[in-house]
Length: 178
Image 1: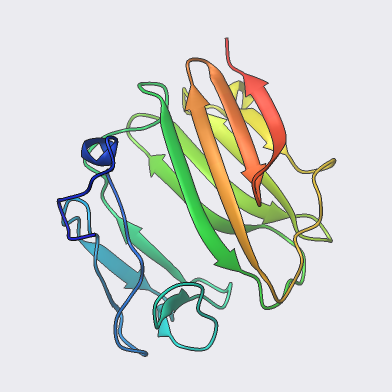
Image 2: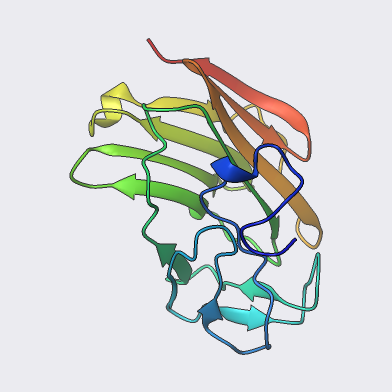
């Protein structure tokens, strides 16, 4: 797919697409949908070590690394959306590791997909008013443990007031926000 073109009828609704393709060691990331600037933080860089598609993937060691960008529109509370990614877990030592998310400090809106617990379990938390007591949480305790050393697909969807969390194509959590 060439940036800005696709035979997919939903292409015009894509707000961020990055395949993290490039030269190993690079900290320059390209958004193929709207040319949003993406910035590496910590030790985030492209790597050819664990690759799902293409020749590189972004590598994060779980300690202060990440990729940040300013999205042109808000997702939480305003529209239906799907946020999805492939990730490879090379190790897990407990705690919380954010896979992806969106935070809007001034609006108090956020969503994320994280691994948590003593064994890596996928969960998501959606906050619509800036207060955690209004958050919708999906997954965690009953979700399957995420295996180390293999690629996984995670997806969070919102349709109407219903949020769904998927791991490797399997629905693992559903919640409705009033």
